[in-house]
Image 1: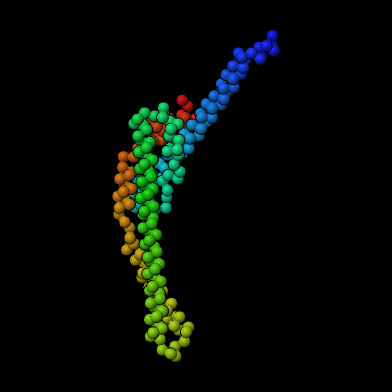
Image 2: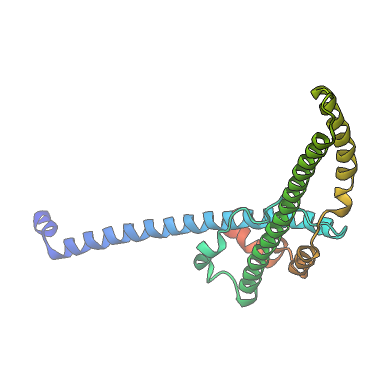
Length: 213
């Protein structure tokens, strides 16, 4: 009887169903874990970005744009957003997209300002090298034949020491600081709400398991 049941089509159907059910349960568990991990990654990204944004806002109130920072170290939203289509309404979805888009523009602005600063530093270096070379030629052209090399070196060091003090002391005053990155950064940060304290943040926290449902 048992042998006949085991070899029956009904039993085979049951086994197929059971295997499929187990596979489906495993799939759901894996998807749930993936969604939880994605929510944690996105939440950490947003929290880190918001801390940096607070510092930038403080500096911008003084008219300064910090150039040694990256607001968004990694970007997981575009990769995993499909997992959350049923969790956020249209307004919430748009606010997340808006946040990531503005942060991306902000990082590009910081890179531009950083490049401008780097170009300025490189120009200062080039100017100094040119002036040093001109100073050497001037001293050699005016030097009398009987003048000793160590005297020429001392004369060069004295002149360059004075030049360096005067030239470098004015670099902070005359350094090129483009205003556009500052204005752009203010524009991108304008009306940018804190997602972590909104309904978006609460939902991400619940999905990530850091806030009780």
